[in-house]
Image 1 (cartoon, rainbow, N blue to C red):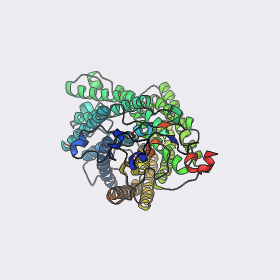
Image 2: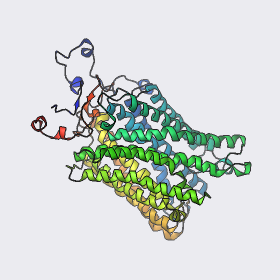
Image 3: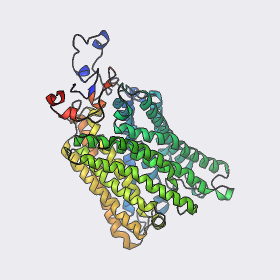
Image 4: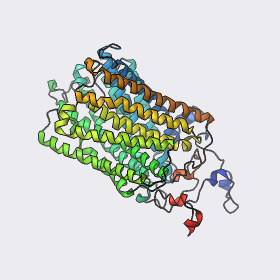
Length: 566
């Protein structure tokens, strides 16, 4: 039996060693050992590239830029909340700051982070393909993102917007005179970026898998991105149309959402949350895919219940379309429909729990190594469990009336969205950084940064559960003095968390210049992407590989050759 997990006609040797005499062809002899980073020089070659890996790097730079902006806006908010009074900024300025923080982080960081960066880079290689199905559309998706980014920056320069990131009507259509249309167009363009990315992922998974790569040999990373892509394609057009309708009502005065003009503000809520709750899983599912890859690698085991974990990704995507009304329990909806949506909200926790239980079982008796990606994965598990359990309170009708519009919602949202999604993103970035750049980062600072970030995050948002239970409303710059101590804890935690992110950014940049050269597979991981050089060749594979084994067959990597042959 072969000792290689993939019976590939092209291996790392095709890019690092001269081919043997029986392999030599005129075409192969003339191929230089070039990778995607140095294929051509100049900015124009990057801005016009159709290489999925370069487009992923463009997304990485863009997402990092907006993560810094969103983080600085969040820190300004925490500085304001350090004291009970509105000491740092005026009330309307505070409204604009938290609105821009939300828009930046939701539409330009959390939604594109894992799928547009890691998914773009890795999905074709995991499938044994040379690129995504539609390379030009892939580039167009980044340009849509860039146009949205320009519109968002123009909104900030023009004075900002103060409706909140949800653009709630009739506030956004009648009661504010800020730049709602420009901010809405920014989100609109970011939405089209998601649609194009989702379309590309779906077609690529269906049509471009390597020979032998059946559905149940796919990495769980691919399953998660496939499920998220379904949501991108089906749900994102709804919010895009909704934003257009807001602009039409604001410009022309046609009554769609404004009751003064004969519209229905509850209609906006239905349309907006029909997208925005499934969008939670656009952010979360790809990070879950990352966690599956990391836990399998650093436990040296196949994911327990592979099929259940794969189907749970699809189940989460399907259930995500049927729970939007739990955001609207206090908005005058029917009590009977509220009961149905409360039940569905509880049910959506089941496939998420399947993933957590199966990851935990995979860890049981595994040969665990606590490298930086694994530490981030374990941090993900801790934060996601807390975020998921607190979501049950908000899905319960009686508790939701008490807790909605309080800091309990803020804490829950950040535990799921920022804690889980960003921890998953950082786990994936650390795991595949050697593959992306060809260099290793320093392991000790990476572990320290992971722990600092986790501790800082917990002290930032943990106290907010208590504040919300005590009744502190969100989106207010002022609060009673008896809540100051918990807000000081929260601001101190935000400072620690920001320091952890800063350390991460420093050693990643350092590694680009001084990091040790990474081999093709520094983690001894299982997957087609690890069968190429680091950084990968421009076309990923000189010849299409053929897959002959199930996913996560770590026995073929770890067992001695004599045992495998026997």
